[in-house]
Structures are given as structure tokens and as C-alpha cells.
Amino acid sequence: DAGVIQSPRHEVTEMGQEVTLRCKPISGHNSLFWYRQTMMRGLELLIYFNNNVPIDDSGMPEDRFSAKMPNASFSTLKIQPSEPRDSAVYFCASSFEGLNTEAFFGQGTRLTVV
Amino acid sequence: GESVGLHLPTLSVQEGDNSIINCAYSNSASDYFIWYKQESGKGPQFIIDIRSNMDKRQGQRVTVLLNKTVKHLSLQIAATQPGDSAVYFCAESSGYSTLTFGKGTMLLVSP
Image (tube, rainbow over all chains, first blue to last red; front, side, top):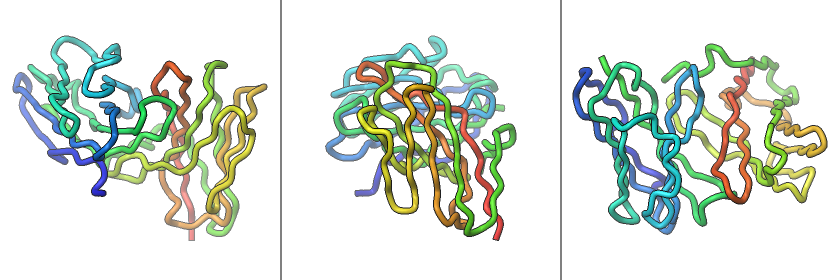
């Protein structure tokens, strides 16, 4: 298996632009997580899907952030409009049977908003 | 890659030494614990996990110890190698919560 696949690996955008991050979880996994990593705050959970349904989005910073999972093999995290403080590394992770199990992480998307 | 370790606690060891990385957790209801390794520019990678019905678990060159009384978790790496240099995260969860990650510890291994 290729593991969790994220794209793009790097994204540089101007403030105010829309940004879309993409994730393909490991086949057969039914839980998907979006995390954000910064030096100041470490790894923060943004949203958790189980069987394509958002279960916990309490970590989504504000309405500018939205996430979708239209099917079991694809998820997007969208920021509109983007701001410089959104600059971070965004990770997608997936697991089999949700909580209390190992989550497999992708390589991340490094987002820079200028 | 991103220098996630600039403000992290750092453990410096010599190649061949044993390393011990510690983690304190706060939620007494947590019953699942996991250690991840993150190399520069990469995503966290699973090392070893342990459930609350155990106090010790061993893998290849790694051992995790869990002390539920004082809510402490440790990762022991035997015969540390330069390739072990990375940031190490502990994470905890309960049956009703997602993984909560610690701030991480940077391990630096000198040849």
C-alpha cells in the first residue's frame, strides 16, 4: 500500500486566496483525520471523519476552514480566504476502526500564506 | 523541512547509548497510548503503542513503559543510532476521544 497520500506537498499562496488540500487515505481505513502542525501549538486535530461522516470538527479554527469527504478514498480541506496565520504543515491521517488505534500519517502539505 | 524542534526539549546522546524519552499525560481516563517518530519534512511514523491493561511492551530496540499511578509514559531506545535522530511524540486517547499529542522531544544522536 502506498500509505496516506497528500497533495500538494508544498503550497505558497497570497493572502485572501482559496487553498484546497487533498488527501487519499489508506484503502480499507474508515477513519480520517486532518491535523495542523506549528511550532507554537504542535499537532492539533482539526476534524475527524468516520465512514465519510464528520464526527468531531471542534478543532476547526473558524468558518474560513471547511472539510469534506465525498467518498471513502478522498478528502479535502479548504481554507477560504487564507491568511498568513494559516501557514503551517497540514497532515492527513487515517486509521482502521477509528479511535484507540494507530493512525497512519501522510507526508503533509506545507502551506505558506504571504 | 520545518524546524519543529527549535523550541522543543532536546535529548542528546552518543551512538550506542540507550535513550529514554519521557512523557506526562493529564487525562486519567486515557486507556491507549502511542509513540510516534517524526523526521524532518515527514509525517509522524508509528513506533509502538500500549493499552492501559499493560505496563510494559517491547518492540524491536524499543520499550514503552506506562505508569498509570503517576500518569507517566516513557520510550526507551536501545543502542541508539544516528538514524534515530528525530522528534518523538507521545499521544493518548480514550474510547471516546481522538489522539491528543504531546509537544514532542527532539532526540539528537551523535556518531
